[in-house]
Image 1 (tube, one colour):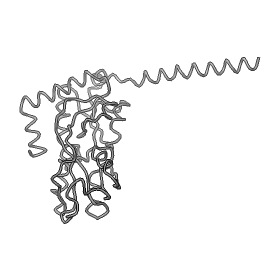
Image 2 (cartoon, rainbow, N blue to C red):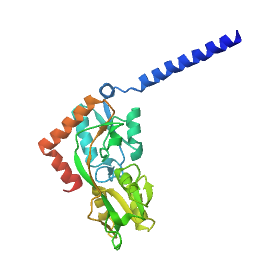
Image 3 (spheres, helix red, strand yellow):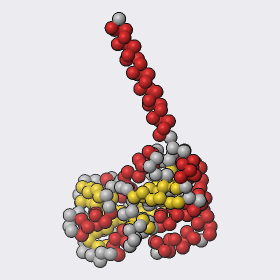
Image 4 (cartoon, rainbow, N blue to C red):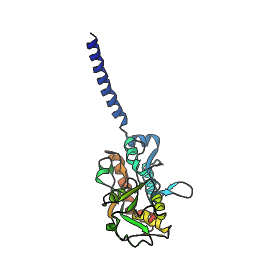
Length: 258
């Protein structure tokens, strides 16, 4: 009798576990457009350490090219824009969990990221660049990085590219500027980072230079949750309208200076 009761208890626990798991999955499904419509807010996730695409301005507000585009998305939706600033490598997890509604963070489209999110049409073509000290004559390109200490922003494509180089020691930083400071202080030999922020960092540090070689060419796009087609359609519409109207070029001139 005791054995039968024990067996029944085990079966009941297993069944209950399946029920709870199913309920948890169901609760985890976010109806983005319904929530946006109800709360009158759309939430952008970013990492405001990536000028000129996202940074803190003199008022302490998140500003930059991506923030300007996000405002246009909110305007199209007829709601307020809220920006969550967090570590770059936590953005896609925050998106999947429902903490944010989309990611605009100078994020390149990669096969790995496509497994965890859907992406808009590309809105900017970027490249990875190498920053070294101005008086460094030994590192002239990618081939010279072998055996060197390289700084990257954690979770970026710069991190991925640096990791592919033979016999390197990769130092990962939450902020690109922290990698640049370690370069200036002689703790690392080079920094691998996207071209636009590289230009910003070097323009403020006259003891640094950017090498001519492009390590990669990649495209930035806006990420949404897998299957979040309705929001994705709105974002693609905004990107198209910005380009067709000429406002996209105005934003590029304002923030990127090209």
